[in-house]
Length: 445
Image (cartoon, rainbow, N blue to C red; front, side, top):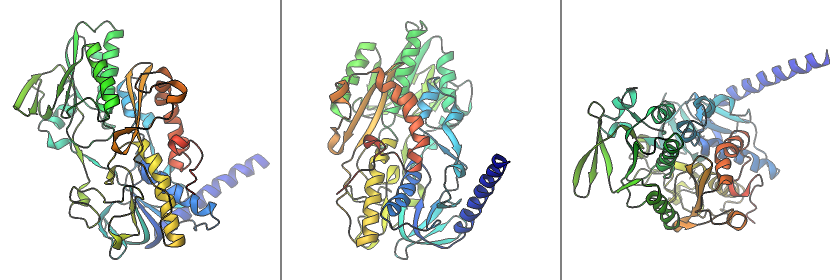
């Protein structure tokens, strides 16, 4: 009887919490508004709430609002694992409302305009929401349509064209890799900024290894076509990957930027310094161009390129008049690689500085050094763990224990495959994971 009563109490408490969160979301003014409920938004919203509470200055439930109209939240680093046949794609998403605790007010709308002069945002429905502090964590957008023929090819099950860069297409990657028996497999990377710049070749290395393990290495050629001038932006890791490319007989075509796909003819068009070239393919994996969201075009909080302009150390807006505006993650102007790992280092710094400004009027000593990481799969059972900071300078966490991180190792592979997905869902999006600091919030004193 007691057990039944306890379950009933838990259900009623959960219902009450959801009702309270819904009521709080109907307000027009909040202490903190977080725009975007991706990796950065969920992480920082929870960390801000926890930081005020740990200081004995707890915010009321519903004082922090998080705005996002998405139905699902995605663990995007998992899409490479799906493409490699290691995960099912439904393992990489959960309903967004299931991840937002009752301490936060969820407003299921997106923002269509920012007005930092009045400390307000306007949602797509026209609702005006006021804030005392604003955190922008919207991510970036994937520009599929800028490559003629790409969207049509991705929708065609027989095209041989796929991409790990979306939930809808990541499982097609595995189907295409698994089905290919002979021919030419091409993997592309665009020029410019993308999410996790190592991902385009992660899936290439996994495909190469799969072909070798299934005795297709002699009948399938693998080529890497990249708009960039080298294998990776950090020289140490680029040198190691270039050596690996040559050792494995993978073709390297640099400053080749994909600009067109003809699925009927199985041809890809690349722009090079010497003009356009057409290349035949049997399998084509595309990493599409990306950029800032359209909402930031002409926005007062964005720079000329369309990124939210923040100080690279404090994550506070660069315009002193907008001192209550902050940003992190892919939407920010921070000059570092855009990854979930970067968010784990950025969120505690932003949280500490926002708390300090609210509490004392000044930023704290917390400073972001540009830390980011790319767990770069090089095959089944092996991974090169690239970690670096501003200036493309390596900043490795495990080198003193396991040795040079430019050498692929099994231990890093299992971090990527098993540990990171587990810690993401159970700790990171709840605000309780701090990257290289683990489960311990950094002390910035």
